[in-house]
Amino acid sequence: MSKTIFITGASRGFGRLWAEAFLNRGDKVVATARNTQSLNGLKEKYGDAVLTLQLDVNNREQSFAAINQAKEHFGTIDVVINNAGYGLFGTIEETSEEDARQQIETNVFGLLWVTQAALPVMRAQGHGHIIQVSSVLGITTLPNLGIYNASKFAVEGLSETLAAEVKDFGINITLVEPNGFATEWAGTSAKQSETIPAYDQVRAAFNEDMSDTDIFGIPEATTPAILKLVDAQTPPLRLFLGKVALPWAKQTYEQRINEWEEWDAVASAAHGK
Image 1 (cartoon, rainbow, N blue to C red):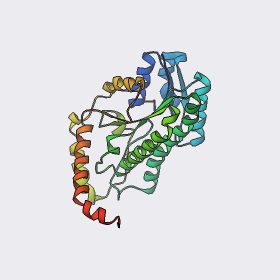
Image 2: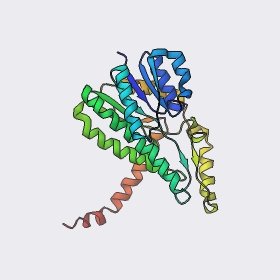
Image 3: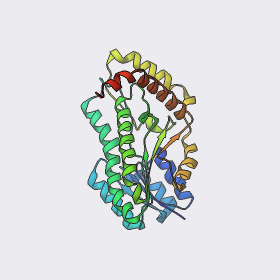
Image 4: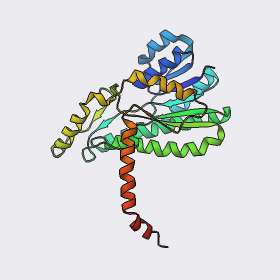
């Protein structure tokens, strides 16, 4: 059976690829973007199967209005994919207040507003699947992306909590955690903080690591995984995309567990009894 899928940030990157994949197999798609002109090609190609809506996810009222319009138009919303977001490059000290607030506003609060808007619709239906596009950088971190890391760690905590709260309503939550992919995430979509010369070496090391193109996946290769995820009867809470993410996560957790165990006597004594 076809599904109705609401996607934020559908103008390019993963959002655009996945929207087209759903439409090509006969699903209905609500494609949203800040600028609906970027969605004209979808409307021309897929006609009534797609509803294009202007949406700035930072605007809570607009997020609720878009979800309600999608529900009225197609009668149901089976899947919400919170894909809107961007990268902010810069060390913690370099990041301005404005840049930090805007990053959290979009990557965390924008996702929260759309999620809150979708939940009443899905509760009334008795089913639904909310897919939060997080990142492997919500599991581990890289220097020069501190506020972005923080935004994805927030998405992880929010979504894991939400999964426990809504499981009895027939609503599933999945965190999709891509490793690096060759999208525009680090290009025109990204923002760079003002730089401080003291961090030139940190930045140079980061740029050298990012120059290894073998670590970046092919965006188009993610579509079968997303289709399978949406069709799953019991979708996972977390799904990595790419072959780099899991080994990296394993290494990170091994280091964490070793350190926690090394300090366990101190931690246990702090319990007091």
